[in-house]
Image 1: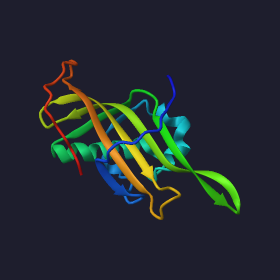
Image 2: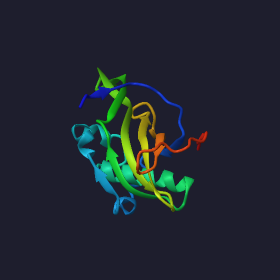
Image 3: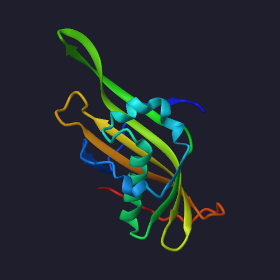
Image 4: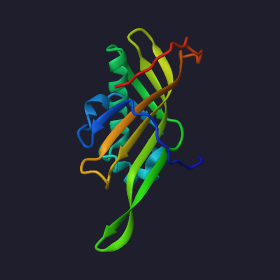
Length: 171
């Protein structure tokens, strides 16, 4: 797999106070999680997001939360990381004990995913991603965590593309 490190900004769709969203293992207890070694080498950077060290669990919880917002009958059956996590950072110059230094002030982590979702009637496959951004790690008193849930395509279990409807979610 190819490693990708990017630095970019997106419009915020959903935001949380840094550290306020606790890891809810209840959501991910019955979800089949596959290929989450896609981010193993970046675990220490992922912890900077402030969501805890069990990233497969908090990712499954966050995905299920977004699915339920759209349809209360939704159930996340499985989540598969389809390629390595994409990381991006921005750093700023700081003074540390009178010395010039550089510190990470912004971090983003995007997890490309294939999701199997039960919509209350049937299973669907979603080509999706969940992206986390934390800004102000050094420059603000309280850093801000933003998450994006992106659906690139939806399919039935035979991989037939489902009808697309225009959808704009902002919160």
